Amino acid sequence: MAFTKAVDETLVPNAVREQSKIDGDLSTVRRVQVGDVAAFDQLILKYRERLYSIIYNLCSNREDAADLTQETFIKAFSSIKRFKAKSTFYTWLYRIAVNSTLSYLKRNRMRHFFSFETINEEVSSSEIVEALSIKVKSEKTALMNELQEKLNEALQKLSDKHRTVVVLYEIEGLSHQDISNVMECSVGTVRSRLHYAKQQLQAYLKDYLD
Amino acid sequence: MALENHNTVPKINLESLLLLKREEKPSKEFWDDFDRDLRQKTLQALVHQEPWYVNYWQFIKMNLYAMISLSAAAIFTLAFAIHHYGWFTFNDNKNSYIAEVSAVPSILEIKPTYIDSTALALAKNDPEKQSHAFFVIDNMPHKRVRRENYRKVMASQTFSLAPAYDNDPRFASDPFNNKSHSTPTSFVYE
Image (cartoon, rainbow over all chains, first blue to last red; front, side):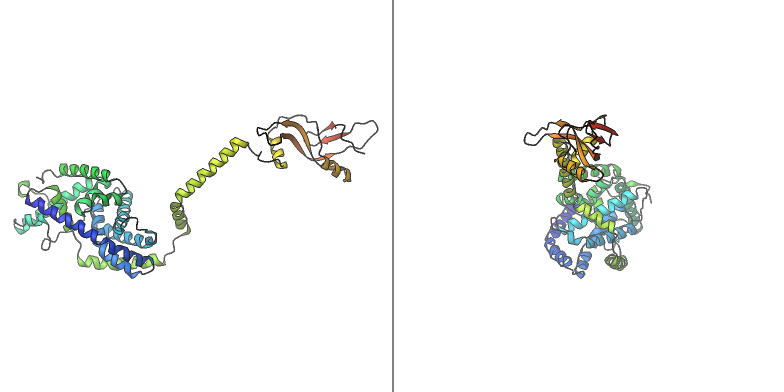
């Protein structure tokens, strides 16, 4: 299906692009470690959107995601001298973000938020938005909202660890190896969680999927 | 917002649907607020002195494995020493003798079989005829051949030398049992 192929092509170059920027991170991190505080702003600018996206897709609340993203950067800044480059910087940073978010979700188990971001249809490159554009404007918005709502509901039904794997792999485009580094588990565990989570999502969303 | 007829929704696969989440992006105003808040929080973090217990806990976390290893080694060494040597019998000093005696509370009567000559000399020179001494009550073999056998003793804070009455036996008083005992012939006080 042409639609699926387009999605795959979107994912792969994204991971390659990430890899090519890793070396640049280390030199910036070294500058921060020797006291160049301003260099940390570069890392914030580079990673803030991706971190926010991960956290937002895990906790499904805009305000909490913003707070947790800021908290992640502050934690990273406070402990950056302990970063020994045993893993890549972004893996280390993502790990802080995921751990902070999962801890937050544990503490706030009973809270559920659904104040989702609105997709900007005019600038969106999503295949789904394009697919929906055959509909009239008002109907397209309704369909978009319903899809968002159902998808978010389905994601919220997953356990924290399964949701994390789905978010990191399917939405953020990280490799299995990177996810295993972020979550400090084996690649096999990542694959297994991903398989199970997608099965669950398929079941929840069967009315909307092929 | 629920749709009446799901047939109006174009069918897609799960991966494509998940990519929809990539399109949920905040506005530029959001990032302006975000940067301002983050700058403020970073500055606060820079001037904020963490309480002592945070550093203490971080130290423990960073050295956890080393501390566990050292504790295990210490426990092992202690257990080995206790098993191999027994409590408080590492050497022949006076404290070990006292501890040995305290572990034998059932002794009812003690006859002094030996009085330390140094103590005897001190007692003789003492106007009140008192000095420190050990009452040797038994000999105890030791596992290690190259070490001397232990003497099971009762330590007396003082022993008194009785005056030398005619035809009276020499005796020493035992303050532990409040008794007087005949002394060996080698013990002579003039």
